[in-house]
Image 1 (cartoon, rainbow, N blue to C red):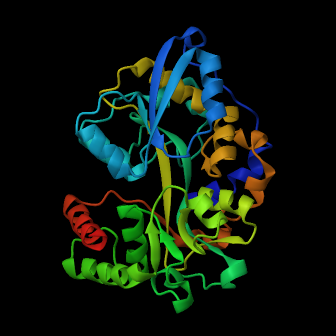
Image 2: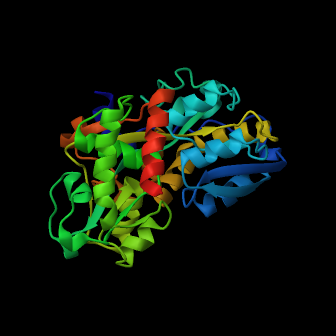
Image 3: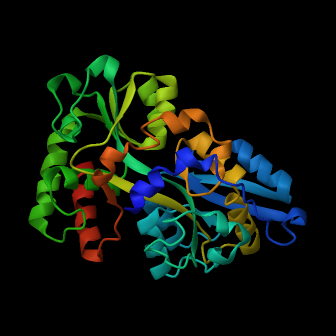
Amino acid sequence: MAFKKLLGSVACAATLALTMGPLTAGSAQAEGELFLYNWSNYFPPDLLKKFEADTGIKVTLDVYDSNETMLAKLQAGASGYDVVVPSDYMVKIMIDEGLAEKIDAGSMSNFANVMAPHNAQPFDPERSYSAPYMWGTTGFTYDSAKTGKLENSWKEVFEPRDALKGQIAMLNDEVEVYNAAAYYVGVSKCTEDSKDAQKILDVLEKQKPFVATYNSDGTIDRMAAGEVVAHMQWNGASHRTKEKLPSATYMYPKEGITFWADNFVVPSSAPNKENAKTFINWMMAPENAAMASNFTGYMNAIRGSGAFMDDSLKTDPAVVMPEEFADRLRPNLNCSPAARELRNKVWTRLKK
């Protein structure tokens, strides 16, 4: 299975030959600007400085907290962004809506460094519109020093013990929260059946009194400060939490856990398309991808990056998932419009 092969890539990456292709022609003398629109706390400031030094292109960073926030801004006519970082399912939506520029990433010089399966993903088989950034999973983290060992199940989050009332935090993310609840109740996350959606809503509404906050920002500090004892988190955030809180434990729920991959895409309205292509190609060099992984705590898809990565990443099961859990991975899906509308109704009802 492709997942299992990929999970083992970190351990062997340090032994692979370093294959850093050149930047796009003339990029060392490039000038101008680049406007990057990315998830919050998801790109190392030092790497932006390195890019500016290497290329002469000045970067301005703006941030968002969900794929849907980014999409809505582009749909509303925002035209100032050169590179955005959508997750897998969102890439296809952007392509279908004409919001993604064709960049032929597969023909870029550093694309030879991209490992399978990231070199040809179902949402963009030829990598005509996108290039890989980070990949990981969405599970939850708990403070074992306060809770003791929890069952490896979403039950601990959706039907928590009374002592955890007000001590649980969830991501403020319609897709992630809905998907996790769907796994727990055993229905398709892309269901078009209102009865299935009601089961998901029932679980989420029952959980709501136990939730201190729905927030995708500040998850690391919130856990480290002891504001909550369990937090729905992306696995890289869990790794960074553990650096501050050694008793933090990342779980792979037996009912299923979302496997996702974030990507670089150039909006069709981008004002600096050539600079965007230079940036994307530059990010597929092993040393640069490794700097991003060392900061975010997530894995990248670049061959040879392991030689530059921190040892702590290679030994943390939150980052390198134990192979025994591989059958729990559930890939992101681009659900039908009907399914997305149903999901949004559940989320709107939950958050009212």
